[in-house]
Length: 129
Image (tube, rainbow, N blue to C red; front, side, top):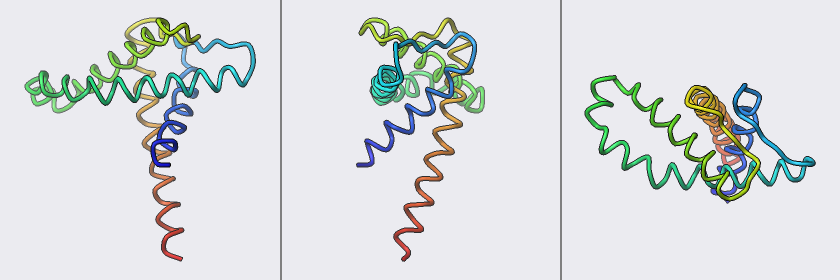
């Protein structure tokens, strides 16, 4: 159940990021867009699960030298890679360059963190009663 909640939260975060210039979401109707967002969020989750630990390990010194700001670059590149993989799977999702990827990844991180916090707080309150 937790994985499903995480996928939905990521899909909502990616949907909000599509409001930025340079990030496009195609689809003929709402159902097609929702399915595309779910697929993109699954791809993004897999990319983050596989490549982010590798990037953190290889770029450890850069993380230290930049006080963690290098993580923003890594997130942008992973979001851009997600767009490329979505295109290879013929999904109508596209990120048009590094800067849209940078701002999109930042929005996805902020929104998903906020939504995860709300879900955790709600779950915790329900467990109290």
